[in-house]
Amino acid sequence: MVGRVGGAVAEPAALGRWTEEVPMNGHGSLRLLEAEYVRRHHRHEPTDNQCSSALVKHIKAPVHLVWSLVRSFDQPQRYKPFVSRCVVQGDLEVGSVREVNVKSGLPATTSTERLEFLDDDEHILSIKIVGGDHRLRNYSSVLTAHPEIIDGRPGTLVIESFVVDVPDGNTKDETCYFVEALIKCNLKSLADVSERLAVEDHTDPVG
Image: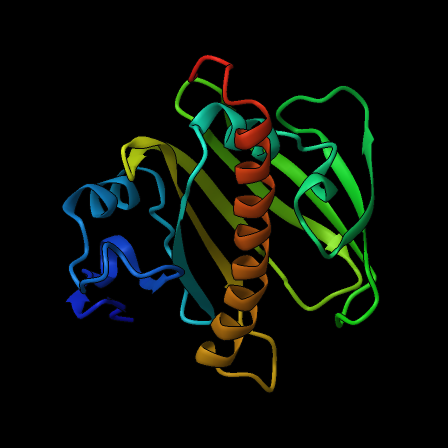
């Protein structure tokens, strides 16, 4: 599937479908650096019955603050508005499994998710859904955080990508649209919480 962001065409094999969460500097060019981040860290290989997409978000907060929220596998409710409760089984490490309770209003009640990859140096987090009461089968996601400068101050570029099965009775576009809507809400909330922390924590060193 060929994806477009701001008029730029992404190679389907490398980038899949792109969705832009926020306009980039008010113009329609897809930055080469962002495309390189996707090629390097977000290379999903969807099958014929799967869809894949990537979203970007520019956050006016330093990467160490944003990452402190993202890496909290045991506390996704710190920024994810649809999570009401989370319990992790065992130690918090790669392979750990969390049981997430979802707030009412969504077509789901629980989600069982495994931590697939965590890199604090490169700011990479990967999660796979392995069970639960929902329709997101074989769902895997990768989230990366990259330092950047926004309006002359430390900021963070966040990219989140996913691959998931297309449920019976749905199209690839419908499935991507639904998952993208959830991710957009999460990324907006991540930005809101991070930017509030940045105001409170402006004296801390940038990590």
